[in-house]
Length: 198
Image (tube, rainbow, N blue to C red; front, side, top):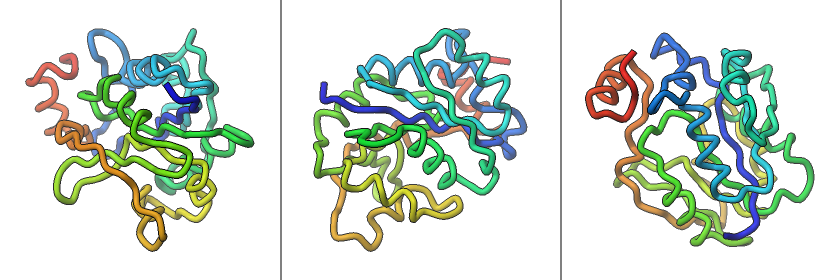
């Protein structure tokens, strides 16, 4: 596995869902901890977990893991501020950077490992859910990472490649197009067995 760091975005307020999605459980394990454990199995040299809304409860769910917590006090402004907060917490020379969120219950370690195999110091790799859907998990090269500072609001990572000369590689994983943002999506995840019933 290539040397890399990891960034777990866990700052969202889950307003549409009505409860912190980070604390939904998979086989009794909070989703944020489950995802952090997946990232740690990749051999990440550092794992930064960015918190915002429900920070105390999320921090408690992560007790005992070899992580660095970074509190984003501007989490309500959108994903860009969390990406920037996490990147600052990494300090200098983070090498390859694996980024994911907490609301993809079908994420497996194999997907993260394949991202790392496909990427290198000059190429980014993005998860493709279908024809148009693309996003996290992603692997960012050291060349791309400084451009995280240019992101604004809740536009996400797509802007990194919108006008740039570089284009990412894509790793297709249609199952990761399912995330949990609404009560209806939570109900669907419970019915499918991906999330524990309340």
